[in-house]
Image (tube, rainbow, N blue to C red; front, side):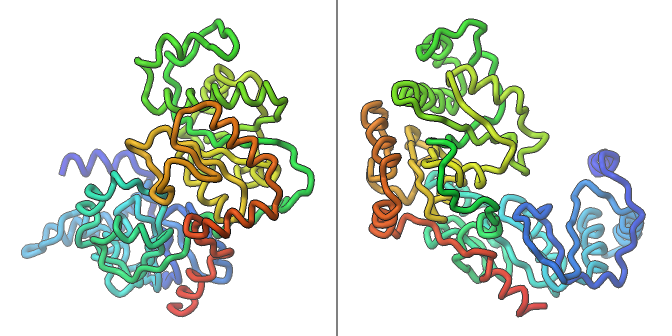
Length: 380
């Protein structure tokens, strides 16, 4: 009880009454996917709001005898009941959407996959999603059914819902501004990665302190050093798609720290405030380590090189062999150079043939989320 009260004090107090709201759709994902639902009565749920009216109602219900629900369950059941929504939409990362299904059985629940899972996640996910329920579950591909096999639902392969919804403004610009776009893996700055004295490509920070760095940093720096050398030798223009520019990372990743990190290991690079999809449109080739963005760009037919030195943990399940035309899981610098050179010189026709030959690797792409919106229109 005390813990619940302390949590309430951290929330934004709201006096809103949702009675007779009759929402068409309630979004439990903060509209992470940016769904265009014009013409529908849509409400974006904010978990940081505490609705005082429903708190009082739930407290009264909780104190009644023979009430088997907890105070928290009473609160949400009362709130969800007044939403009276036809559809609720959310992603798999947070369990809130699955809780909603239990407390508001009349509403149809659509869950969509937020991001990629690694094979190492299978055992943990089987336990986490055990006995969860939803009416529909939109997943990236057939393989991910293994991850979500504990969910009682109707699976629909739709690719990335977020990726499907994004429209590119400067589509198919003929002249590319950048040779290479590197997809940032930065999350937070470990000061041990930096030094006031930088001695070019062979930065002694990495050479002397790699054993004490975060494992993810050592892997990324290893690739950055190779990429830096390639761009210097071949006079290539590199752009870094900063993680701090992403909408979902705002206020979570420090942009200044991210720039310090890349300035330490790259001698010359550009950045833009545009989203990564727009930057990729201006680039000849994108390089991905373990970001969702790599497969999403590949689904759109963009040239992507997957460099994965961390097969122990984050091994792409769709890349079965150690290397292929647009991926390499090893550490040989010369091989990485050759992969980059090959893809930079690869014509559109040749690239399309490569993709066609490896069609099982390319993630499904559903522009404008037609599959999802057909379900919504059917249920409304």
